[in-house]
Amino acid sequence: CGSKEFLKLYAYTLSEPIAVILDLDSLVLRPMDELFDVMLMKDGDPYYEYKGTDKNGLKKKMLYDQLPIHHQQNQQQHSAGSTLYNNTRIDAFYTKDYNMINPGGEKYAGVQGGFLMLRPDEDVFAEYIHLVLQGNYIDGMGWGGKYGYFYGGAQVQGICSYYFGELHPNRGVELNRCRVNQMVDAPRFDVNMKEERYRNARGKCRDGRDVCEDCRETDLKDIWSVHFTLCGKPWHCAGGLGNKNSLCSKLHGEWFRIRRSFEESRVDDEDGGGGHEMRLLPKLEGSYRPEIYHGYCKGGGERGYLPVKI
Image 1: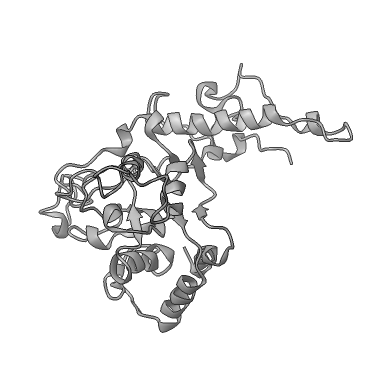
Image 2: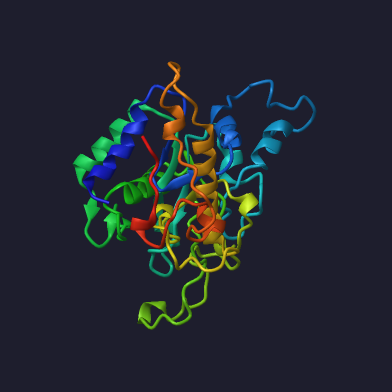
């Protein structure tokens, strides 16, 4: 998470209406059209406005209700007072990483750098450049003295949290991290933490809520995208994933299922040569944990991985 990570902010300079930043160890499991539709929505668009008595727009509300939003403490789901309904324009969707915060610091949790959906804007990019050059980062405390005291906080994870949490709180919306950018992380502080600062936090939700979803138990069909951090990288052919029914095993299995689907789709070149030689469809019999790795691991560890032919 060195200074090179600021390269992600160059997504704001793109000419497309929406940009999506994903780390290379990410996997998208389903389309994200609902998020795109909300960001592209314009005030007065007849498609979204209800012609009856509902001033909020019934179709707009129905669209919002499909989104995997992270709801803060005491915030009713799909409440008309939520950030979404107060905003006429959404400029970003992101998730937060609550694994590195101190107890009580959930408000200042970092934006997880593995996923960021944003609206490109040269003015926003210029503002980020100004923040970096201004250097309003204090070691051990973060941007503005609050955002980014954790690992990676001096770069994108901290500065984006500062931008959306302090400078422009109504321009971005936090998504449910168990659905988008899913890392299979534990939702609560460990009850066995011995440090004094955790004395009153043991067993409590890391995000500050009284009730929190356990991302380790999320149904695979409800997950939009994955970030292979705590589960390890698929190409490491890990042997410690547990049984095939654990969520990490299922997510690794999805990665290799899609890998095999890609291999099967590779066709000959237009001139009639080479395509079939690029396919790699190994036999499942005799391979390492074929129910997860689909034949692409000869054994445990990185040396056991069969790379894509290019």
